[in-house]
Length: 85
Image (cartoon, rainbow, N blue to C red):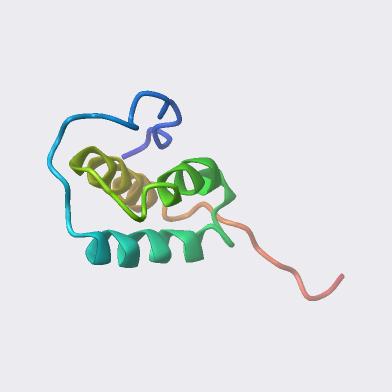
């Protein structure tokens, strides 16, 4: 997926969808949070999704899988640290 992650998450607080397993969501968001070190383009949306670790809804899972598809489509992007400087 070549589109950037969803950044307009203002209306997600009470979405009315089903709740999902918090432990599965916590592991997935933790992995995305680790990737933020080399992929700062997903920092904002991952930070917003971290706010829902206690009570994640299905829509949060959909947004997080959108990030995964975005990362798959932009695998060549990233930060490179040069040790010569």
